[in-house]
Length: 609
Ligand code: AGP
Figure 1 (cartoon, rainbow, N blue to C red):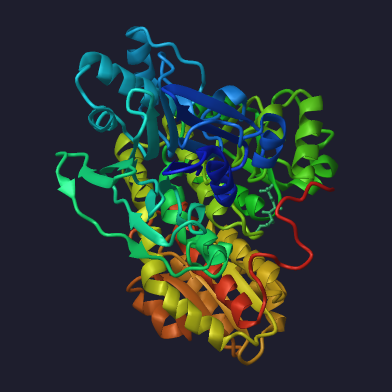
Figure 2 (cartoon, rainbow, N blue to C red; figure 1 turned 45 degrees about the horizontal axis):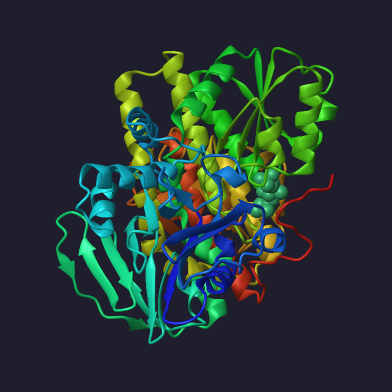
C-alpha cells in the first residue's frame, strides 16, 4: 500500500503542496518518497529512500519549480527501499513521470517485452513497466494524446493500480487511472488534486470526486474528465462534500486504525495473492530439502506458524516445529545445524526475539527463510530467501490484517510444497487454490453480515472476568489468536488451549455463565468438538461459537453464535474464522472504554528481548 498525490495550481509552486500532502498519506507507506514537477517544459525530480522528513532534510522536497506535479510515499513490495526504486519513475526519454500504488502481476513479461523493444530499466520495481509501456504506446502512435496513451497502456496491466502520470509534452495535465487501488480527486477554485486517499487534500478542499475501478481521469485547471478504460466512454460525476475531520479522514471514517485494518482484509488478502511466484517456489525448494524445519515467531506471528504447521503436515506431509522465538535458543540452540531450515515469520521484520533465534541458527549454518511485511527490514537482510506479504503498513498495535496475510502466504507455500512432493492431486490443488482466491470475498461477507452480531455479543459479555478460547486441530491456532487479541486490547484475562485438554485441568475454572468461545469449522474435529461443548455446558458455561453457516447442531448448543460461509477447507479455516474474533476483541475494548489502537504496555514492534 503506498500513497500517491498530484496537483495543478492556478498560482504558486506545487512542490510544497505535494510534500504536505504526502505527509498526510504517510500512514500508507513510509520507506521512500519522491516528487516530480514540470516547469518551462522540463521535468524536475527529487526522490530517495527514507521517511519523508529524513528525505526532506537532505533533499528539500519543497525546492522544485512548477505549479504542476506528482508525489509518492512508498511501502516497498517489489524492489528494496532504495533511491533507484523510489517513485516517480520516468520513461527512457525523461519526459514522462509516473507514480503508482498497487501491484502489477504481469510486470515480468511486460518488462521482457519492453526491454526487447530497447527500453532501459533503472529499478527493480513492478511500477517502472507502466511508464515505459506508455512511452511505447506513444512511439507506436505519435498522434495519440497522453490520456489515450495511458488508457491503452492500462489495458495491458494485470493486477492493482492507481497511477498519476505527467508529461512535458502536455505540461498542463495529470492523467490518473485506477483498478482496485483507491483514487480520489479534490477540486476547489484555485487547484485540482488527485490522491490515494481524501486526507491528502482535505485541508485544501472538502469537495471530492471518487474515481471508480476501471476509470481514467484527466485533470487540468479547466476541471476533470472521467472516462471508462474499457470503451473510453465519458462518465459524469459531481463532487461530494466530505464532512470528516482530517483526523477521521486518515482512518477513512473509521473510529480506530484497528477497525479500518480489520475491514481492509479483503483488499490485503487480494494483494497477498499477488506474490512473486519464484520466491515462493524457491522457499518451497529449501523446505523440501531440509532435514528439519522450525517455524519461529512471536505473538500473533507465532499463531500463524502454529496454523502453518498443520498446513505443511496435512498438505505436504512435512513435519515442522513451531517454536516461540524467545525459547528457540534454549530449546534448539545446540541441535540446530546445517541440515536445519528456519522459517522466521515477523510482520515488522525487527522483533528482537525472532532475530536472536535467526542469528543463532545462522551461526550454526542453518538455512534461514523469512516472511515479513516490511521489505528492507533486518529479517529480509539476514534471510537466504524472503517473501514480502504485501499487507501495507499496519498502524494498530494489534496485528489483524497482517495475520490473515501471513496465513495466506503460508497456505500458498504449503500448497507449492505439496505439489513439489506430489502429495496432493492436481484436482485437490486446483480446488484449494480456487478456495484461496475466494477467501477475500468470504472475509468481506463475514464482516458485512456478522459485525453487528459481534457488537451485540461484546455488549452482552463486556463485564466478563475471563474467557476460554477453544478449538481443535488447526482451529487451536485460531483460538490462541482470538485469546491474544482480547487480552492485548480489551485487557480481559483469557485462556486458550486445545479443546481436548479441558478435562485435564482447566475445566475446574468453569462456573455458571463462564464464557467459552469455540472455533468450530465443519472439519474432522467437528463431532468431537460437540462433546467438548457439551462438557462445558454441563458446568454452566456460556457458549459462544464461531460456526459454519447453517450448522444447526451447534446453534442448538450455543448461547451465541457467529456464522462463517460454508465450504471453507480445513487448512484455510483460520483466515475466515479469526475475523469474528478480531471484531470481538475490538468491540469488547470499545465497550470497556479502551483505545484499541494504543493498548497499554504494548509496542507495535518489540525490538527488545
Ligand atoms: C500481535 O497483536 C501483537 N502486536 C504481537 O504479539 C506481535 O504479533 C508480536 O510482537 C510479533 O511481532 P512481529 O510479527 O512484528 O514479529
